[in-house]
Amino acid sequence: MPQQTFGSYEEFWPYYVAMHSKAATRWVHLTGTLTGLAVTAYGLARGRKRYAAALPLIGYGTAWPAHFLIEGNNPATFGHPAWSLRGDVRMIRMMLAGRDRELAETAAEWLADNR
Image 1 (cartoon, rainbow, N blue to C red):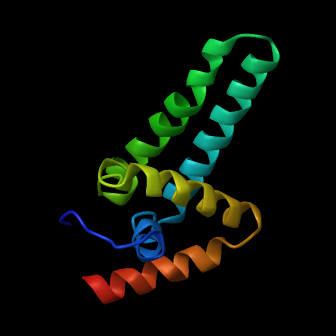
Image 2 (tube, rainbow, N blue to C red):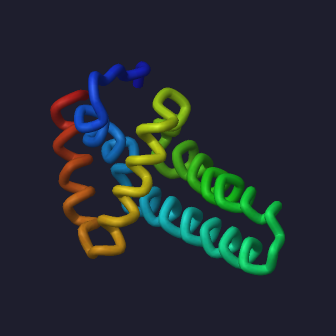
């Protein structure tokens, strides 16, 4: 799929969700991000500032391969890093709130309209 352009984050959001159309990809993101947060928090609580690197290393280190291996696409981060980070936080918050089905519906709708 060619690089997409967007005028706002709200235009970007459905595309972001569509790049995570498979539940497995979303759950890998959630697991990697929460694990990275936990390791970072642990390290900082112990006074080890270098542990702050765990969040991007573990978060992206698990999420990016999921795009290649599960979704068969490139991470949205490659073209839209700031909006992708914002989207990741929003997606994970929705998942933790039990709204994964809503994400799947948003992804399916965007893909149906843009293929």
